Image (cartoon, rainbow, N blue to C red; front, side, top):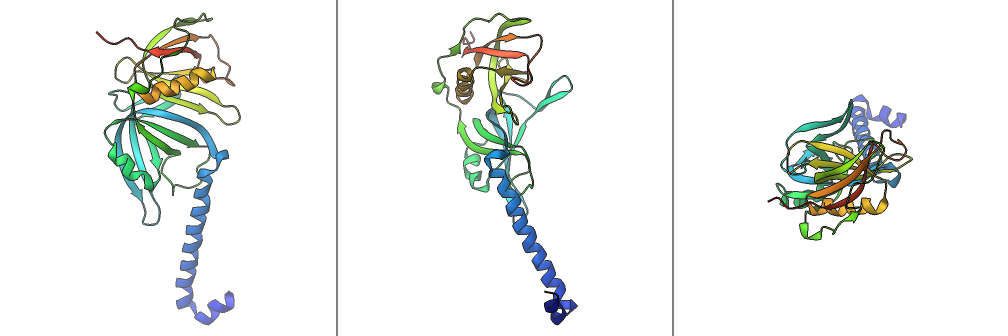
Length: 250
C-alpha cells in the first residue's frame, strides 16, 4: 500500500486516501446500523395511539430516514409527563421509520392511528433514524375491533387505594432489560394533557389493553394501588385489574 502511494505521489495519494476513508465510513455505518435490527437490541416493544401530526424525510444523500411525531391520545398538545423527577415521556412522541414506509405514513398523516414500535437498547448510529424508536407497523384505529372487556368490573382491594379511571390508552408496552414489565399510559378524560402511568401484572389483561389501544376507544380502567412497588415487576404502584368500554357521554 505504501509503495503504491509512493508511486502515485502525494497529489494523487490524497484523493485515493479520502476515497478509501469514505468507503470505510460508509461500510462502517451500514454495519453499525445493522445492529438496530438484532433481537437482543430491543429494550421495549409496544404500541402508541394518537394523531400522526408530522412526517418528514431527513438525512444526508447517502442515509435518509423518515422522522415523525405522534400527538398522544385524543386532542392533546405538547407537554412533558413526569412522575416526581422522572420524565415518563414527552408529547408529541418522536419516532423513526424506514424510507420505504414513507408513502404509508403520508397517507394517514393527520389521522388517529396506532403505531407498533421497537425501542433500541443501544443506538450505535443515526443512519436508520434520529431517535431510538423504530416503527414496525402502523394502522388506523378501529373502534369496531375493541374487545368486550377483561378482568374485574369493580375495583379490587388494595393496601392504599382502589378505583376506576376513564380515558384513552395511549401507550401499552413490554419493556425492560433483563426483566420485562408491562407498562401503560392512560390519557385521563376525553382530551387534554392529563396522563397517568400504570402497570399491568396479568398477561391476559395486557393483551386486552393492546386491543383497546388499537381500537382507539375510550375505556374504563379498574385498578388497585399499593403503598410500595416491586421494581422487578412494574414501574408504578398502580396495577390494572380490569379494562372495559367507557360509558358513552350523554
